[in-house]
Length: 153
Image (cartoon, rainbow, N blue to C red; front, top):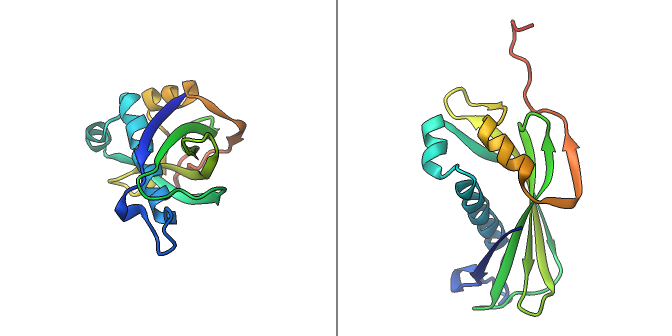
C-alpha cells in the first residue's frame, strides 16, 4: 500500500474550522505525484516525455471532520484502469489518528501528450507500475480513452 502522512495546516481550513474541500483535492494531487515519482516517473520524467496526467473528474466524499494541525494518513489505490493505461482512476482515503475515515477522493483521468494536446496511452513503464499497484476493492476495468486518428486503419 502507498501511504503518506500529512497535517491539516492553517491554509487547509475553511470558515467552519475544518479541512476545506480544495485542501483534500490538493493533498490528493500531492500524493499522486509522490506515487508517480516512486514508480520512476518524477516530474522531470513527465517533462522529458512531454506528457502529463490530466484529471477529468474528482469525486469527494466526506465522513468526518479534520481540524487544524490534525494528522491525517492518506493512502492511494488504483480504482480503475484501461487495458492500454490511457484511462485511470486513483482513490485516496483520508484517515484520522482515531482510525476513522475522514474523506475519500476518487480522481479519474488520463495521459495527455503535451505537444499534440490529446490523450495517449500510458508509456509501458508507467503502465506496468499502475498494473502492479494496490487496487481498490471495487476496482473497475475501463475502456480506452484514445480515439483513433483520422486516416488511420
